[in-house]
Length: 300
Ligand SMILES: [Zn+2]
Image 1: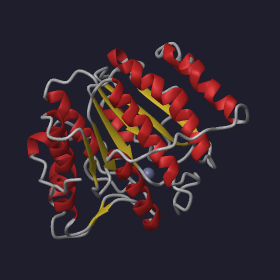
Image 2: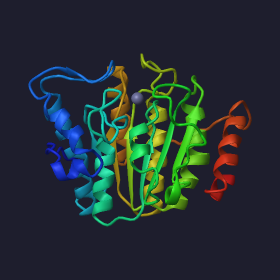
Image 3: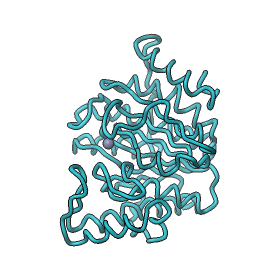
């Protein structure tokens, strides 16, 4: 593994997904503490960190597209996927993954996939590319839950219809349940899309001990999700960039980051299994019914 210090995102890179007014509002927080909403505030150094968080993803995208690396893990904060074009939200100031995806599209890529396994729905990323078929946004998340979006029938609009895929989940799911959803639904859709670049919003808040959410995923489960993302990228001979989002149990973030990074470095991974039948049958069937018109491969 090679460590690379982050660089700041440029104004041009941020403006691909954010409004000038939003950039100016965040820039004005430098050196001060400003509260945007009950969840989201900037401290004196948040603006500097946010510029580097977004810049790190752009830099990682540049490097994998240049063939300098085939996988990257961006250990950045603040997280990004709740940030909308015109405002910060849910601890997020700039939408790091979206800035990276927009950079890849500006470089001429025609198929970019964002897999978002953070326990919360990435409303910002979804909205920024909702009518854009060049970007497949696929999110699994606890539902109903913060921020309230991410229902199964939110599928994109216009040209982008079918290129937003939401997999809302009840609380309490663990490694085996996630493994089944990712192997039976996420993997076939990703392979059918044939992405030229896979970006992953890596939230570690589905972790079993996370204080903010109700899932029960362990580091083994996160390695499985990463394996699915790499399988999608590998089938298309494409690079993958993993970007930290949420996660609020520090020990869990450390263990899970190590598990995912180990997999990115080519570590051994034993695929997880799940019961042949059970309560998950209903959920997976609901996904298949809703998504098969756009992604026939989910029929399996
Ligand atoms: Zn989250």
